Image (tube, rainbow, N blue to C red; front, side, top):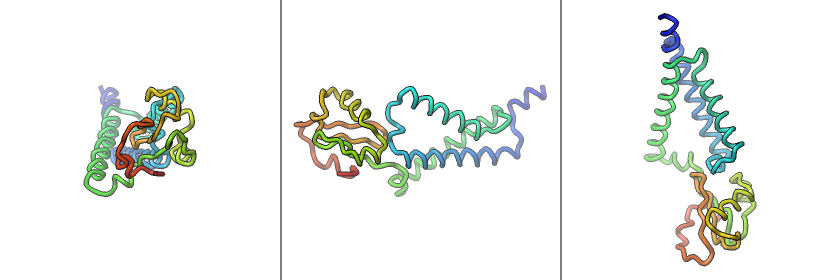
Length: 174
């Protein structure tokens, strides 16, 4: 019975360690997401999926520590969820949202790829052409504007489609 309880419970001294490591992993991931941009949120290739799984495995191992227990796992998850709720509130009620979230980036204008903007956003020619195909277009020349959104999605405005220039207000490189 003692062995069973050891697998479920956690020593009290480990509680602040788990909370601190979960906070560090959360902040570290937020910083890396800010540095590497919305590209990490785009549709994943098989190698991207492997990297995301590895992020989770490394993060989980660091947060829970050794030995892993049910209580440590629940405490780590609870800490991450509380941090997400707290940062969500900060983003909503303060200027932190602009600091934490990336701006949308114009990557194609009037059928031309904006190479500097693409480089800054960490997206490739292949990413752009994939978005062209997803929009149901046969050529990049049919793209009036393409924007990499903060969510990692690509928005496409077709050539000849009327649009209000205000739609691009706040978009980087416009």
